[in-house]
Amino acid sequence: MPKTVPVLTIDGPSGSGKGTISRLVATRIGWHYLDSGALYRAVGLAAAWEQIDLSDEDAVAACAARADIRFDAESEGGEPRVIVNGKDATHQLRMETAGAAASAIAALPAVRAALVDLQRGFRRPPGLVADGRDMGTVIFPDAGTKVFLTASAAERAERRYKQLKDKGVSVTLDGLLGEILARDARDANRAVAPLRPADDAVSIDTTGQGIAAVVEQVLALLPASLRGAKG
Ligand SMILES: Nc1ncnc2c1ncn2[C@@H]1O[C@H](COP(=O)(O)OP(=O)(O)O)[C@@H](O)[C@H]1O
Ligand SMILES: Nc1ccn([C@H]2C[C@H](O)[C@@H](COP(=O)(O)OP(=O)(O)O)O2)c(=O)n1
Image (cartoon, rainbow, N blue to C red; front, top):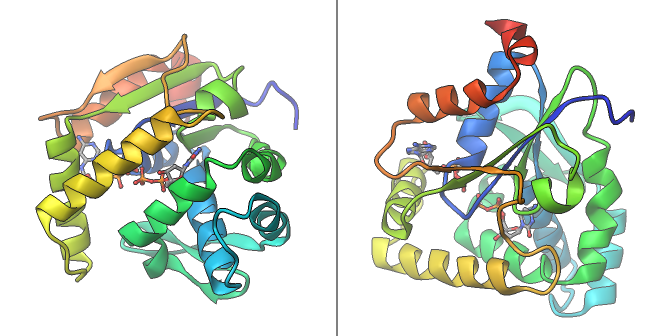
């Protein structure tokens, strides 16, 4: 796809609000949306289904290369359904176990390499909002607007707690906080494409902020000519 298709990247740690904000911004301006974390989660799940050892880099990369991952427009609670190798994995993918598996396989360079073209293929007119860990640093380094969302770990754990409780999942706040901190550390300390803000990213600390306020801050970073698409 031509590099002239505009991209807005939104990176950040778990629970910082990337998915929520990205989806709302994409809807407001009529752009496509890439949930890159869902791709890593889907590969982790597909590998588990095939009983592949998640530390076997070549086997997981081969699984990533042949995985059929589709985002279905029909949504569950505002999030698109994700179909992995023909099975609806929407619910399973949101579990923290899927997040942990995704974080583990995401540290393997061959797995990341296997997903590069797939992610760049989402760049289609009129534009793309891409959320993840390395959207602004590795996948779309030429993106015109880059955001790095953060929030305190305690608030991110509370957000995730509410989100999973609303979905009927039984979790504890302490357990989630521990899992989030472990995932932050693994994502930020890995050798390849670690979680970090791009040098030209604008950081937004969303601690104590409502969703609508963050959406407006992100929209304000876009050039007026792009922002106006849907008012
Ligand atoms: N200011 C905020 N920005 C984004 N999400 C928020 C905010 N406040 C609360 N939330 C809630 O936090 C939860 C986690 O958001 P999510 O978009 O899944 O984060 P991420 O994709 O970064 O893991 C959602 O249930 C969302 O509604
Ligand atoms: N661009 C990306 C997206 C996700 N990952 C990895 C690291 C993350 O811990 C997992 C899950 O990502 P996801 O964005 O779905 O997780 P959260 O919604 O932030 O909890 O995948 C990545 O390495 N690179």
